[in-house]
Length: 325
Image 1 (cartoon, rainbow, N blue to C red):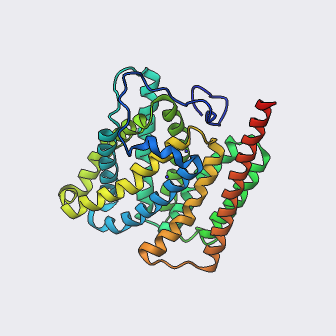
Image 2: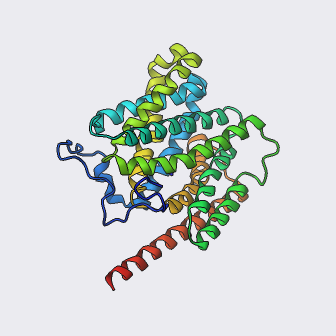
Image 3: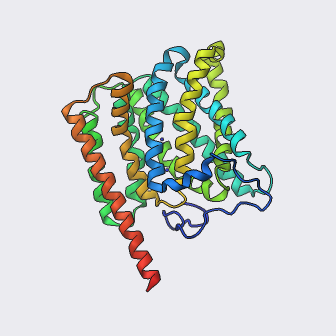
């Protein structure tokens, strides 16, 4: 639906023993029930919860597109999410450097581009192939960011599952839809990088709230031009709010917090679960059945993700033993 200026030479996030950010003394603590408490899920749990949320939100968005159009859905999603995050997080506007603001603005631009390109793809090609093509971006990042050969193996296994889920080929798909999906994948890889950078420069989810506001402002004119008064329909607004919470507020916040402690390579491979969860959401929400090939693809993707997690956990244990000795 992920490296930082403070650790530019490494794709890994800060260790769990070192806080990624230190809130200013005068910064108000987050209210009960906000992202601060979600840290108890653990970084892997937060990523998985975000994946489930974003895919079921995507299934709901498909039902909303006939009402508001692709750009209208993106506008509602980003606008409602921005309002919710700004109210909940109450980010401070002072005390940030130019580099901080530059990072959050680029993060917002990346977020807007990723969402816009993906929904343009959905307007032209089916959901499964669109998600399958999009996930190639994070998979490519996992190979480029990894320093261990074993991670390339997990990425290759996940890639095989992704292509199997896509039916073994995409020649019959609309070329523009394929291009939009691949572009969304590239923006998804950039999102991983700038989400990690933003999470380490801003306390809690402040940077996410500001980036979401940037993305919403960029997309608002496009949504108004395409959908106009349809965006004010009460039912459309209610559905758009639900899509925003499921597809933006929950997953983006969980992923941002997870990236403070989870290496970018492991996060990117976990993102290969997206097509599998999308197929499940499609079956439960949209009555889309799974073929034997799709079930086999899900097994490959899950196996790759489990292998990536085991590799990173083992690496963490080795580092801990090294420190203790």
